[in-house]
Structures are given as C-alpha cells and as structure tokens.
Image (cartoon, rainbow, N blue to C red; front, side, top):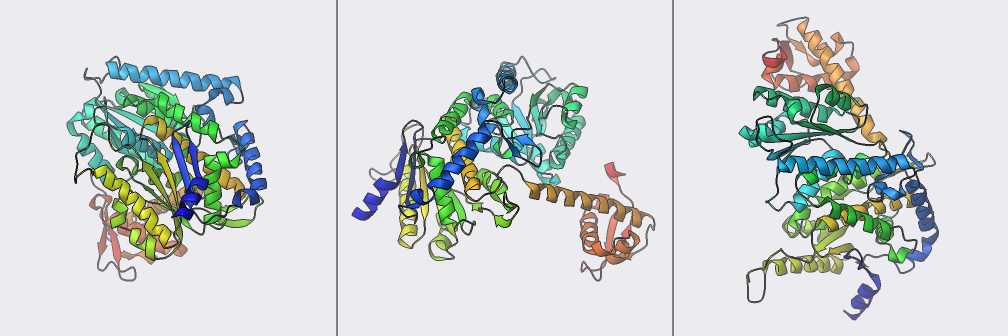
Length: 534
C-alpha cells in the first residue's frame, strides 16, 4: 500500500480554484509520459491558442470554432461577436424573467408551467444533461423533450403533457433550420397544438441561425421570440450558448454559475504547464491508454444519479469530434475513442463483471461526488449512511479493477452544482481538442454525419418512387424486386424491400403485404392511403 500511496500522491492533481481533483494513479502511463510528449503537447497548446484567436477550424464550412468565447466574450476576435454574445445573454435573462413573472404568458391567460424542447444531438443532449443534473423538483417549469423523429416517442411525450399543452412553451432548436428530426418534431407539435385549438406560434420560441428556414418561419409567423445560434458554435459544444442557457434560465437554474464554472476551467486548461493542466493530463491518458489509435474504449461511470446522462453527453462530444477517417495530412487513420457508461453503483450489477475479468479493451473514468445530499442522512447501519455505501462501492470497484490490471481515472468534485457542471463540461471540451491535436485530426467537423443524412434523403426519395410504382398498378401483387425494376432501381431491391415492410406495417400508408415476410416470397399491393396522408 505504501507504493500505491506514493503513486497516488504523485499522480493526484488538485485544482483548488475550481474544486476538482484528477487522479491518474491507476493508469499505466509511466512517469516519463509528460516528458516524452512535451513537444506534441506544446504544439497542441499552440493549435488551441490559434483556435481561440479565431482561426478557421472547420474547413468544411469555413467557420471559426468559438464556444470558449461564450464564457469569456472579451476573448472573441472582434467587437461585433462580443456584442452579439452580451446582447443574446441579456435577452435570455429578460425573456426568462418575463415568462417566470407572467408578463409573457400562455394565450389562455395562464402562466407557462411546462417547457417542451424540440431538438436533436447537441441541441438536446446539453439541455437534457443540465436539466437532469440540476433539477430540484421545485423549479418554475417542468421540462419535456422531443429529441427524435420516432412517432411513438412523440405521442408518448404529448400524452404525458396532456391537457397542460395550453400552458406549455415550445423551444425549437436547429442551427440550419433544416434538420429533419427537429423539423418533424416541430410539425408534430404544431399539429397537436392545432388539434387542441391552439395556435402554435403563440407558444413557440426558436433558437436558430439568422436567415435559416426556421428563422424565416419564426419571423413570418410572429413567434414569441428568436435567439441566435451562431455558425461558430458547434452543436456538441453549444450548451453554454442560447441552446443550453435559454432552457436553463426558463427552468430557474443558475446559468451565471454554469458559465463561471466553465470559464474558470477554461482558464486552468490554458496553462502550458502540462502537470498543472487537467485537460492536458486527460488527453495524455487517453492517448497512452488507447495506444494512440482508439484501441481501448472509455467507460464513464459517475457515482451520482444526477450525472447519469453525462456519458451520453460525452458520447457525442468525444465520438463525433474524434471519430475521423482522415487525419490533417489526408492519410487514412480511422481514429476515434468509443465512450459508453451508465452510473455507479448500478453498473456493478451490470457490466463491471466483464470489465474486471473479460475482454481488456477499455479504461474507466470514475466521477466521484463527495457531497451525498443537501440535508442530513439516516444511518442504514451504525455510523454508516447510504452515501457511505455509494462511496465504498466506488473505491471498491476502482481497487478491484486495478488488482486485475484494469486502468482507471477518477475525477472528484465536491457536489453537483451549476458551477461544477460547467467545469466538467469545459474540462472535457478542452481534453477533446488536445487529444485531436496529439493524433493529428480535426475535432471540429463531422463529414460522416453529413454522409448519413444524404443517404437518408436517398431512402425517402426512393420511397416516393416505390409508392408511385405501386399506385400505378392498384391491387396488383408485386414482389420487392419487381417493384425495384419498375422504378429502374434493380440494384436497390434490398432498400425497396425494407421500405415496403415499413409501409405495410403502418395501415394508413396504403401498402399491404401478401404472404410471407421473407424477401424472396413477399408480395405487396397498393390499397390507397387513408387518414391525414390521403
């Protein structure tokens, strides 16, 4: 134990100014790692400095990456951006105050009591994380999310809101205004408000880019308000923009503290002394553990229910940023860092068995929260509380993994607060940027996401052709390959079959399957659409 104690003391970074500790003593990285990578880390510091000064960091869209300016507007490269940030935040505070005091109320005359957020990806994950982490149950508004284009999920959300729809403020978030999942959720919500005899624009707020399709619609229909989503803020780093701050302000959370925590962590992680820079230390641990090429997954286990969504948040932040086929020199590298996790001690009854004794393709990031609850705790055993057990399970799991040669990082915060949440978010944002520099990739574009969107568009276009081909022969039974041939798409018969199966499973779409579901035996015929689609 004396050896472990000395290693722990040598590898525990304590940041008193932020209230965070980073323990890398259970990682295999040797003591010379910082020296060996001193040169690459200083290159990473230079690259980050250029990014913060306004260099073009997303060549696909020819844009800057400036989420750090949101917490410190004085660092923005010009006065126009600084003014836009200040104006936006002032308008958010004013709007939230008007809603909470009833100056902005439902057309029914009652104050708003619910918030319906419609978005996807970073436009939903950040607000969801903040809401789940900071919700006390006593806030001014209850929050609901539409973060997918799943009709059943939309129906469930609307059913839960129920008769309170007339007291529900809707916030639609989409930078381009053309994100299909968000557009579909908005259309579904509009229909629900209309069915309830309500005018959706009288309940709606937009967060979008100026001049986008959503911006133009909000202006044309005179929505309650519109807040900016700047092109220099990526979705996965947008939680400290209007994307996250507007819903958080409406919910009564301390957005000033959230920004303060992020700003203080930003200041700490600008240090060029790697031993005193927690984001640099994280990036180096990832680099070493994943053998420079993402060969090990990062399992994130927060020992706090309020942080259960943190691993989902990090999945997008880390995997969308680091999952790249090409490096900055155009070489094929297939980089990435897989993230998954849930929470402790729940995971001890799920996949910790494999982590300790199964395939060794991971390292763990534990997140420890020292404060159990806001009040006092009962004893579940003499001088022992439920929080003591939670703490014991964390230390026990950490040690059990280490005893079997499994690596882990432990991040400790005093409590879950707006301040500490902002600090955690900023810590991982900077670590992602540093890691990207170490492996020579661009963390700030996402060509693979766009490829998936384009492929989805092809599916929707093909579906229209399939329906047209069937409708041209009403009542006639045809196989998937026959329909594909009728569309001139013989090479896409597999897609045609899958489209037909989806249509046939929904009676209002006008397609019936006759016979077996096996693709070589199934036949389909056109009956004609019913209901709203007719």
